[in-house]
Image (cartoon, rainbow, N blue to C red; front, side, top):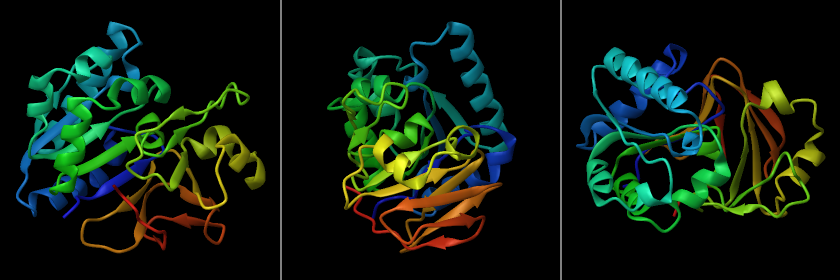
Length: 243
């Protein structure tokens, strides 16, 4: 049985998102997974050591709040994603978290690597998987270039090939008309486009058929289903074709 999966607009490891992360961990513990909290900071791999240390400490504090073991995997590039030790450390973790940064670097670094294969295998056997911002974007089939829209999109990891995510929606993109948002994402007619606000997530539980909103703001369905803005606790009927 695939585990729970969360598409997060922003806020990984922050106290405001602790309830969400605890629920994802609890989902996986119920399926026999271990109380470990895997941080995969690859999207931030080109940032400074100071920033990487910041993410590590933020995750450590969150893991302590949740009473689980933090495992920070220093996978900063494609070479790191081929490290079999890192791939093995993911096994049976309750929560695997792809945090934010550069989605193009993240997709390029993880595609067709032992680490990505381990992530998928463990999610399919019940581990919860969360992607925040860049981490949510790469789970689709394509990653758009928001800053250089004439560039071709980067191939994504295609775990959720039918869903495209615009993270930080209420901060950076809410002014964009729905039709323009679909252009930004190069989204074909049969694709679902979600705008996910900061400190907010769309969550598909292992035991549920529908998605649910969790967080302080909203999830906006912009395309592929009746357009609507959903708030905390609301359920969203979206097709689920996780590979």
